[in-house]
Image 1 (cartoon, rainbow, N blue to C red):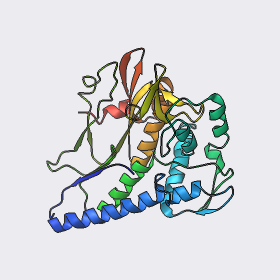
Image 2: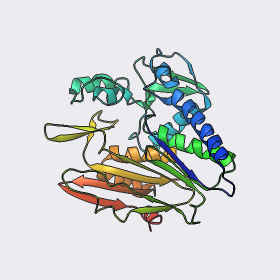
Image 3: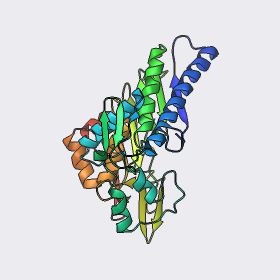
Image 4: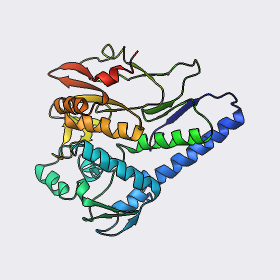
Length: 309
């Protein structure tokens, strides 16, 4: 998935042989997920679906079936702020696996692409997937890392490992305790905002987790600037436009890393006011960092504060 992975664990008996065995199991699982989910691999299951015709059946493997159902749930919960069919719009703006130059598309170009984006174009019937428009595509990049973290977690548990931390591309899950018998300690990275340093803002944000997952989404790594405005790789499904700098970082703690991953992206797409209202309404454990009128501000829900030390 274009990311490094990191796994830390401890058990009563840990040998070099066991480390090699665990690594082999993890890499085989991640390889299988990559072959299924990757938009960069033209032979992946997702790529084959994207190249298929309208109403042409694609058989879903268990992973694709589960992640698409999770995506549908997050889409409904977020009132459309999360949408895995945005791939064509992502490419239109110059992000993702395309050679298009990053620039602002015209309103007409956006509307033309919006004619075939939207979860309503996907039809799931059992283990069969269809689309009603030949140009509709799926891009799982906003939830696939979290899903992979959850799957590696299941593997470690099945191998009899119950104290661990897993991280893929910044998405994290924890179980049990660290070596010192304390909760796993995680520091949230400061988003980079050229106009104002944020390191001081986040010096105190260290989470203590045991059995929870955490995901952070931000607009500060993949973006372009044009005509004095900052355009993020995160696309608003309603407008079809790149999200202008508002919420620069959103962190969500949840039981499942895939859900945390999808919700963190949703909060970025919503914008500050709606994201805060959504987090409060649904009682999320969430932190939202916004940049408005040249000023950094941080909002935390009460549930999020419980994990701080």
